[in-house]
Image (cartoon, rainbow, N blue to C red):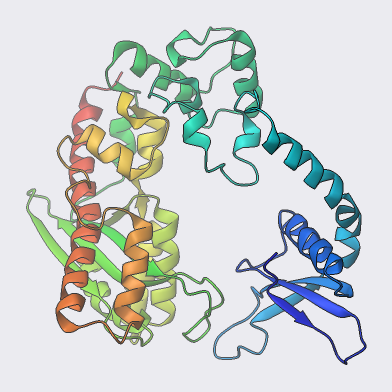
Length: 396
């Protein structure tokens, strides 16, 4: 057992075992970990009298980091589990000594975390498999399993599906895009010029900027594609440089671009709206603040538009932009990019800002990769908006 911290106030006092977690609260899944460590320590002759979990305090705000960590006692919560460790360990050893268990894959494979052998026991599900049903409930999933139904197109009418799931089933049955009526009306709120906006953020566990807490996401990069009424497009981008607070500069560079737009559009817009609010709070001028706050209030989200009106068989039960864009705009995806997903982009962006050892050539290359990724999001959203407009003309 790898124990994070053992401490005691004096040479004869009982030890306190401290498990350190990067979360902002104690979770139920942490307790078995602490219980096993306590059992092992006591078995090795260490008198553990108390156990606790130390985690990041969500109330902490930079620059005062005196409450960065919070310690929560879990001694009483784990004592029964400590007593049960020998029995559980015996069961595990018996299982390991025997044949491979014949247990059907199910919910237990994903809780509390996904089993690392999940792919070994489960064939990769195709887009027509019932596990791909959009937001399928455990109840419906169990009902389908009992009935032996594996394909979405085979789900009978007596199993209630949501409107979105019904649209998904129809798209798979016809192998074509299904468009519900009302799409054109939903897009009518979007007026040109249109500023298509995307942010990339960093969220350090240890806050480094004024007013930020653990994991506060702060925009350190933005991309805008400005679509004019005549169909012409201008591209704009900004990436922070160095470890200084990026919010003031980010807002100062973004506000003039958004001021040229009648409508600001994003995908999963609550994220962009939150960042616009943070930039507005740090704005240098009243005019920039007003522009950013107007964009926050009036931003149009394309995600619910797609979700409520369109389904393509290649969505695979999700409405993430990574699935929707290549399905509705063939040839415009992310596979050709060196940075092709948000988590990679966030890690690289944090490295660009805080890694002082990064060489100039490496730094420029990283910024180019980040610009290409963020720009693809807004370039793709322009193409997606146009594709939705064409689909809306022929909606059911």
